[in-house]
Image (spheres, rainbow, N blue to C red):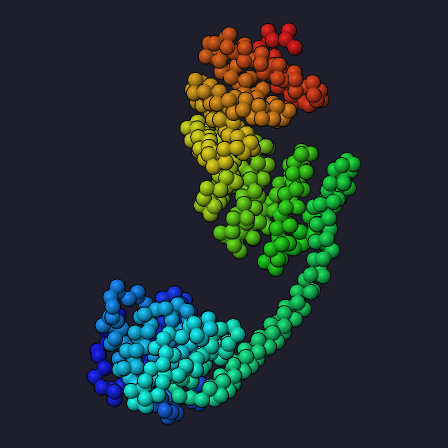
Length: 537
């Protein structure tokens, strides 16, 4: 702060409305008071009045507050003396710490000597007056003009037992010369006007919002009544009915419910009028229905249901294209349509949906960078392209690239969640698919290396969960695939040893579920590839 010039005469207009004197132990209280005084607005009806302090201003600015510790010297520094000389009033914040401060005492004495006719206002922060007032305010001393002793000044009491909020108005009264009663009355009127205005605005807002809400509810009721029965049926089918019918084998009843729900959805037409919750529920139900039909081999019905789900998730995504949940939901719709075509060997029809699924997965990774779920989704999507290229057998390099990309995405997910068993299983699966791609390209040694990495991961998973049938099946398949690759590479001994391990694993699986057709089929394949294992149990 630049030091103001030294006041040259008592008649010179003061630069500062007041000088705030305080112990630096009371800095927080001084800062609060300084901020309040400089932002306080004099009631408009009192501005411009003539008082013993002069014309009442609109604002009490500026007020000088020393923000720095005084230097280690025996006297006030020049900046403080100049500010005291240029101040119309002195405000002293009193406390036991202020009483012990020689700087506060010197500021009071200097101000008295410089301006014997200007007021000194005291504010009692804490402590008793005898312990809080600096000596220069209360010690007996002869007044130079009257010869009378200096008496204890009247103070604005900031203590809890004192004036409370009234203490600040006492200082305003002292600074302006306005009567305290007048200030209190005007301030109360201003507060009342403010509360009244806020109350009126709030009441008007409530009336307007209530009216709008009433209109909106009435407009929505008709559509709600039309959807209520169908939505209730869909919700029931999605939860209780689906579980109960599957549990008792009454899929014929479930099929009739599905048909009714499809009729309802077909009649919806434009989806823009449906709320987001209905669209989301619609998509989830249709996908569940599609899975049911797919399991029963009813691919045409499944494709129709997945297409309806696709229409619903597409509408949701168009409304909020960067919402991760909606991106994910529409990605599932693209996958199911593509997967249905893939199962029917309609690879050309599956490709655009698998490609769209990959694009949505990539977007999901951008929206949620580092998220393991998003990275897994990208791995699945790249894996679909890998499977498609291998099935078509037209572009080996494209298949390799897609399989490597799928593996890279899953490796990144595994690094971010190294203890997630599900991600580890997905990672093993990606090594297996890359091995198939390398094998198809004629690179059997690299294919063997990928299968070996798959085997290492499956060994680790089985150590954690040895009873997991899915892990045991993948372990068996990894050993069988390694056996065929070793045989092609001329290592007959190694091939037979690996095939023997696969056969033993298959037999253990079949022993737990003799009717599992997948396991029986794989054991038959192992025996067809290695006939000499027929004697093993």
